[in-house]
Length: 82
Image 1 (tube, rainbow, N blue to C red):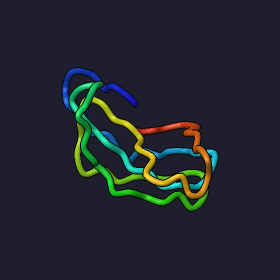
Image 2: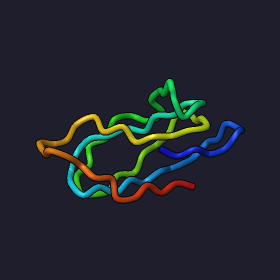
Image 3: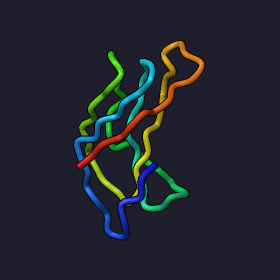
Image 4: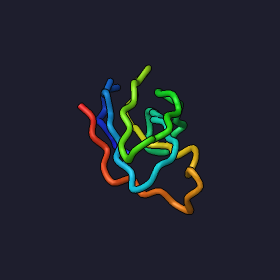
């Protein structure tokens, strides 16, 4: 999760690096405690990185893993955004 300050922010396009393949989406909200809403479509990672197109913004962003792709766990290595 990343807090971007007091003013609502638009970020993009974020890139997420994983240790395994899976499916995720980006969610945003106005508080670290939520609620959060989807600001990207769910995207299946076919390698170990995925780029997301955002359709909204907020103060706080998180990567929501929606499918582990048959793995017991997925570790997020890095998240980069401008």
